[in-house]
Image 1 (spheres, one colour):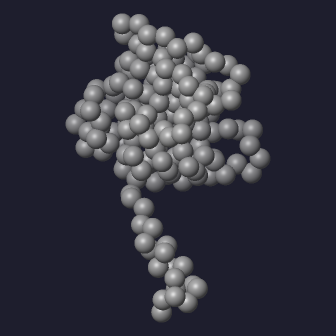
Image 2: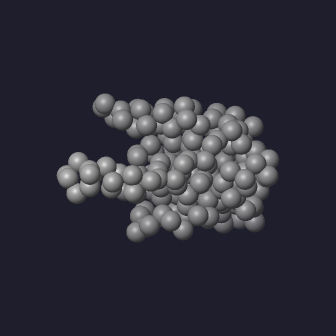
Image 3: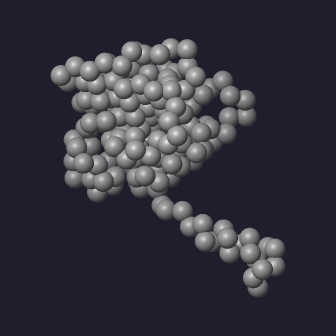
Length: 173
């Protein structure tokens, strides 16, 4: 079940509310899936739709809010507020979300040639950091996944890479 216990979610991701805000990066992931998302207990959905031709109409009811935008300079605020992020499988989006300690579902674009997104998603899933699916399997995954099984992504160590480069170019012995 997607409903992980509050304690395990807070321990792994620092989530504040039971279920609240869901951020989706990429309009193709939305469509008829809003009902599935609402049925899972989310009360707010934020869509970044980019250049998409489909522009869902934002709305707000007593039990559910839909916010829509094309682009923002930064997704930092949305990621911090999100209880779950559904995104395309680009490396930047994956790493930015995982570094914020947010549960992540990535949706693979099956039309890409030499699909590096699939390779990245498979490895991060194998390591226990995210779930992945296609557009057609997203509703089923949302209903069956258990967020408490996800592991936090380890923080980066850029100093190790810097030391390696220093050694390679002869600045350090």
